[in-house]
Image (cartoon, rainbow, N blue to C red; front, side):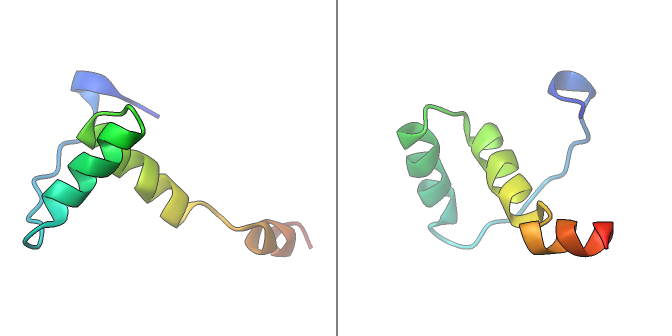
Length: 57
């Protein structure tokens, strides 16, 4: 996975208040807002254990 300046950029509009939620969570996890968003997206889109087992079967 590419990170840093070579990464894809994607402007994003957030609902009211979501930026503050992301900032608060990033601060709690000692991450930048970008790193927090990427972390949460990876969690949301990571294959579940069930999907992994189905792929092997």
